[in-house]
Image (cartoon, rainbow, N blue to C red; front, side, top):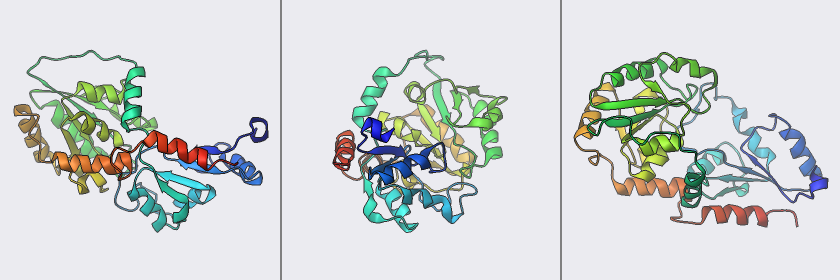
Length: 294
């Protein structure tokens, strides 16, 4: 395939070589001196070690040694990889294609619109809860109790968007007291909502860019995050704080305890790799072209 297409470079996401036929492709590329590049498929946000249950084994970073070049969105992820023994010289910080302005503008042009503009009265605030996969040290039982709390909170219409890759976990959401909106786009849900609640998913970047109030339900996970370190969120440490925050937002959705400065600092770091308003898509293109086999 590489010979037939005269491929000059092979691009993957941060995938394990044992998945699918990745190992065979890497071997073939190596034999033919075709460079391989690992591109980020998500956004790395966590500041603690061992983010996932069962991730304590040392082999979890072995996959990165197989690629010639590795791109990360931010310095946080590069430093994490270097700390685990990945060669610093092969890691490059280029920002997040997913959340750069150019792609977000294009994405919203092609996004199928499936939601009604309003589903409740103007005196009711719309809220969406974006969940995270349970393997990311989530307190599932407490999360389910939070659903009960939210269902009884007057003045709010709250819906739940299970994580896109929930898999078998999706059945947990079958009998909850809140509407399950798994079939709707997360971007469209953030546009619809007046308030967005998140545990650890990178979708939090969407409401921040839209200027929507963002509640980080820290009490539902054991991990720590970059957005809390940079003061880019309303950190909620328990059910009482959640109820108080919702009451406050009901009175004024613009009154939040975090600053525009903190949000902008976080977005600069996570989207532009610390270089404000860089041409992220252009930098990715230039990198891939310049590192292709001549």
